[in-house]
Length: 148
Image (cartoon, rainbow, N blue to C red; front, side, top):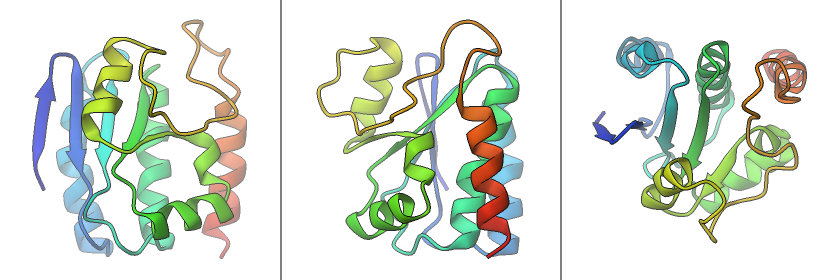
């Protein structure tokens, strides 16, 4: 897994496949992204070909941990197959998705100026703590995914 810091944005690459060992390894490295207040994280999904239950659980756990710190997670380079799974599980409604990593980073640095953002009906997180509609929806979706 590779990590790059672009100004105040952390970019993490998800592994091609996720099992319990890779999940634990990923999270031990992911924790360094959470050291800042309001972490801004981009997950590079370019290697992910199969968006299975474990991969979705990792995405949701990353978002949950970032939101606990009033931060956010954006997805980049998501394959068409993975996008379909995210759409069918409603997980796509929790993340802003970008075709390129650079676009996701640019959206953090200059919000609203990136033309290539994916849809997110709930919108980006608000600056006011507790005003984001995603926490309730996140736990609802996590419960549904984990019960599969």
